Length: 382
Image (cartoon, rainbow, N blue to C red; front, side):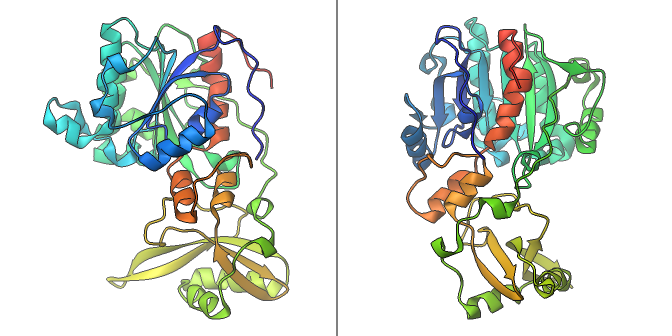
């Protein structure tokens, strides 16, 4: 999916952003028009990818090792795509326990330091998996929101699925905090970004946190007209599994998924499915299963681990079935990255980079619809 050109804004006027846990820098692509004042990631391969695709420099290292002296200027926005496993209530405590329990709290320590110096950002975005809404019985989500509200921010969240823009099912949570600026908000929850999960999580928040809550509004995009098949490489440009390998893979499908695939094959039409191998418990026994979807969407991209999380492409055509693994370039397209993006060498590295990233058009929609107008007082032309 091509990325629209960046807004034409002179450098002194452009809002500045700090990008924490920046990975290869896909959030920065979505924040078109913002100036990146500082970027950070602990992973050497991701930092190398960031450098290959962005001007400027990225600081490679642990967020806990940073101090406010490392952060230049005063940002308008601090963006943090903190590791999903690293946000826990335990991290709200001080000392060594905080360092062990969560990278988010290392980021928050820096925001508190900036506040003390009069350099706190008027906008903060925390991006994470939707599981944050229920982890720790909702206590983790409440702890993050309470920290933001306690610092004087008006806080709200949106659950945004990349499937509205791209042929990939990828719901993610965006906690948006604004202070001293006004963002578009409604009187209550509205679909599709205020899901039942989010509404339930809001209901579990302490009253003091709910008092600082905002139901941020972002426009729903036009109906997506791109499906998975439209992003795939030409058949001759990719390596297909052998007949034996294909049969062995399909044999892992559960009866329901096998029936769906057989129906697609029997139709004689050209049909494309996305598939993952997953471990399921059946009759008290762990078994590996192949799970397919034929709705034009890829499953949520993940980081490959021993090959088990690599997504497969299954093609039915004229009664025959072929199978192969999704490529790194196809994964990049599923994240909304342009063809000119420099991927790291090796499929595993490329898939890891994309599996850990945030979808570019989702960030762009959040930026255009909420962040940019709040920080500049100007609406973005459609």
